[in-house]
Structure formats: structure tokens, C-alpha cells
View 1 (cartoon, rainbow, N blue to C red):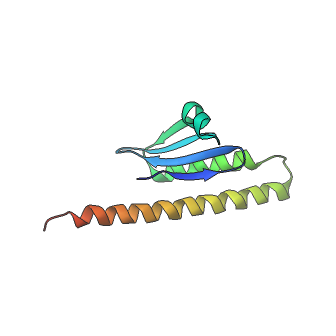
View 2: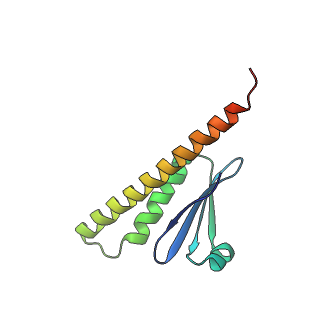
Length: 105
């Protein structure tokens, strides 16, 4: 599966998958710095990975404890998580179709 990349002005987040885990790679926006200095978090469940990603986006967005600001950050994080989840859903559906196309009946 190709990584799904999310970028903000100061950071980059890649969502990846290996044979056993969902992986969040989180770090600086520039590619050289990203590969060298990025943090990697591993999750066995997709649900756990999306929850942690949601918390990360919310934490990065909160600048003050102003209620309107928190609502905006919450809406932004929810929107981004929804987009990432839809991309993952599409990739998972296409990989399932590819896996089934090679099956012998």
C-alpha cells in the first residue's frame, strides 16, 4: 500500500501499512529531515491508529483554550481524519479486489 500523506505548514504525517501493523510516521515537512527525524508509531488495529491520529491533529491545532478555537480545531481534525479514512477505505477495497482476482475457485 502506498503511504497516505497529510501535510501542514510545519509537519508531515504519513499513514502506512506493513504485513502486521498500521504505521503513523510523523515529523518535519522537508523530505530529508522527515526520513531522518520522523517518529514512528505502530498500531495493530486501524481504529486505534485513527484515534491516535485524531488526538495528534487536535493537539497540534490547539493554540489557546478559547472555546471557539477548540471547536474549530475539532472540526478541522474530524475533517482531516474523515478524508484519510476515505482514502484508506478506497485503498483497502482496491487491494482486496486485487487479492481476490488471483484466487482460484
